[in-house]
Image (cartoon, rainbow, N blue to C red; front, top):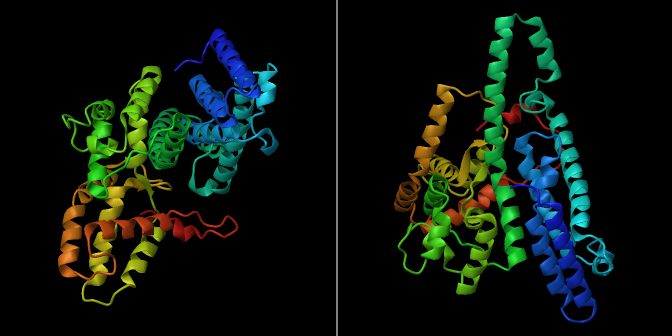
Length: 391
């Protein structure tokens, strides 16, 4: 989406000034005027623009954009005394779009610095520089190599960086999507789309959206007749006719991707934890019982849940594309489809299982364990390199 033209930005500023003056004269409440300001800021795509203006790898853009969107929203609803938007200044002629852009730039720059600091601390395990640009160490090896060898290395490096960027985009999708969707729902007063409690149904809905994104909007429009994807239409049950009309307004501005974003919030995959966290999850649930076969049964339960609820690869995965890695990915996708069977067999073998006595309880238990596993470690805690092996 292109940056709005100067005339369009001026029109938004004019609308904001009139709204602010109406508020100061007692015509609309503070909450209402800030709500309208948030809507106007959203139409500018300022978060996207300031993010793209940074010198940063594209795999980092979405995290930055999410941080900008969320902070802009918080600052718009906060009062001037709390470091938020000063409505009186807007009424006096200050530019709403200028305020949003300047604040967005500061947020984006700060987030980028945080990313660079995090990357520098993990230098032995992650590439530095931007995609397509060799690190200082790679410059040395390239200079020492022959012409043919250099071309091969540059090709391999390009493939690897592209693959890692793909992993990073998948891993950050949960945080990014939920942040953006929450901002949209708050701004336009929309309820949250609700996923099915069965993780496999959610997984299949995620696959359906990825295969045909336009199905999200179709499922909203036909939710009462169920004449669309049966996996998707029940997810809109919490939406009233007015809510549906508000989504249609969003779609008229941004296309069907607005409906996709709202569904993705409910179905997006979590990042798969690294091996040390997976072991901790398994050890925790294994400790709940001494029943015969419990250890192997729960290990299978953990792996099935990770396959159905998480990305196939974890955030720190540094393996190069290969037939062996393809086999791992295929196996995990196949394992996801076994979730219902694994749970059913578990309940037959352990009808009073401490993990839960119904499929819903087991799914909730596994979800809580995964949430604990994804909690970040304290920043002052030393990291053992041996613990960075992959799941």
